Length: 130
Image 1: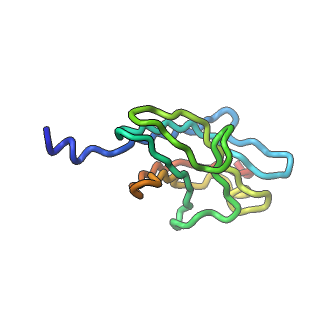
Image 2: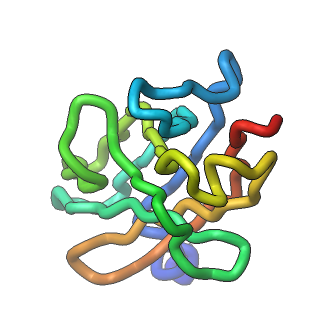
C-alpha cells in the first residue's frame, strides 16, 4: 500500500473529442476542433498546467494553436484535490497541412509547470477534406 502511494500519478488526464460538428470553419478560414478536457489534480496544492500538441512526427504542427474556452492561451491553474473540466480548442491556420488534411493523429500534452511531470493523450484532428 505504501508503494502504491509513491507510484501514484500526481494528476489524471482525460480528453474526448466533441463530435458534433467534427470541425468548425472560422471567419478567417481556420479550422477548429473541439475537445472536452478533464484534468484532476491529485496533489495537496494548487498547480499550474500547460497544454500543447504534437503531430505524428513528434513536433508541433505548423499553424496549430491550443486554447481553452474562456481563457487566454493553453495554461490553467487547478486547485488542490480537484477536477478541472473545460473545452479545449485546437485551431489550424487556413491553408496549413493540418487544416487541409483529412484526419490527422495528434498527441495532446499536459505538463505540470511546478515539477515538469507530463501526461499525453492521443486524439484526432479533422481537417477540411473530411
